[in-house]
Image (tube, rainbow, N blue to C red; front, side, top):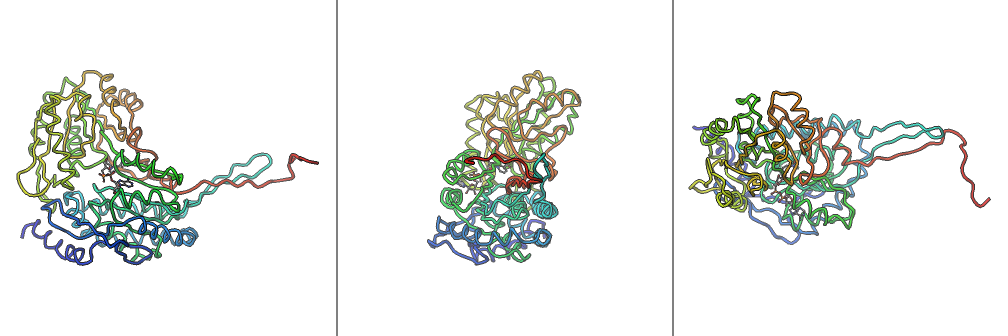
Length: 503
Ligand code: NAD
């Protein structure tokens, strides 16, 4: 039996289960259909087959979940942090135990290739362990004495929070947002993306089996404009941690204005990889290809613009084209597959529309530029060359396996082109000139930059973007800054003079 057949066989009981139960909401430890009784159909991008029905929640469902999170909050806030740590580690253990099931379900639901998703499930466990270990110190503060006061600070969890996640790597991203919220002592209402609801539900089951008290974490499924919007407007939800498109972030900011929501936004990107002629070109080529064609290019940190110095451009592009044409597109459960089908017909149509945009703008399609002639949302890995930075293919986030190449002559030009976009999430700089690397990274407008490296996450470092790519940072203590309030308390150390009025 081939590995693909083997994986399909393992997937079948998972699908049977999810089809039988559908994906219901989970509120205060109980399953709930949407109060309206409405459901929506979830299909696989692999062959457009029906996977399951999903609760299509409205504001009443969100309200019930927010109430549950509000009721559960005081006890979870006051739960001893060392105990909280144990529960979060138990969730990580549960993820590891079900990692294969999570990976298989994620691939079928999203189209992401198994070679990447098996690691994504385990990374989810690592996210829980990382924040579990930091939970006992989350409330630690400072001692800031003044002549008359002993000033101390402490941090307290902000309250019930809403977490809204996208579909590109839904499981990993959910853990990345929810683990620190729970470690901080917040309770959570999670609204996963409508295109990929399955693994959020599995994660929830794992959390409850690990001993998380009912109501601490609630799951509400549904559409962004309906369930998501209601969550961002709910008065008992103190903050919204959102990962998704920049234009959705802007809507959420408006929706949350009346209730003065604290927001944390991880949004889109049009990230440059800049290759100077003194770089290790072999490694730069590997990294540039990996960063745009892995995860189907549906990756916020993808290097979707390649800026290559014109002295090396012809050879670099020729080698790149050859490699792109060799990328294996196929079934996501085949371990050989490097690029799987795109998440949804709507997204597939969006990505394909850029093939015509590129032609109209006068760029060259050096590789790909077409869908595969078979069922499912498969596109060929695509390379646009002869591009200018003012073209739409260089400015807009395509979010597929599509790379736009822009040559440059000088460092100044490279910097100008790199910064001349609305986004500023990541940048990748390839040079062996240390001084140039220092100068360039200092001026590059991005929240995260790697020099002579692909994106290698280190959990204590800050994750987030500038400009249209986001507001706020995750990772290390930055996550706690978002989910917690700073509190200052001043204790008089003696009878200092107090101004006396009306004496
Ligand atoms: P999206 O913005 O369409 O949807 C994300 C989530 O927001 C979904 O759960 C959706 O239902 C919900 N939503 C939609 N409208 C809403 C509204 N009005 N109010 C509240 N919630 C609403 O994004 P997507 O298409 O699912 O994901 C792809 C995007 O996510 C890309 O732009 C990508 O760059 C971005 N992304 C960013 C990061 C990062 O860390 N910066 C990581 C992954 C993905």
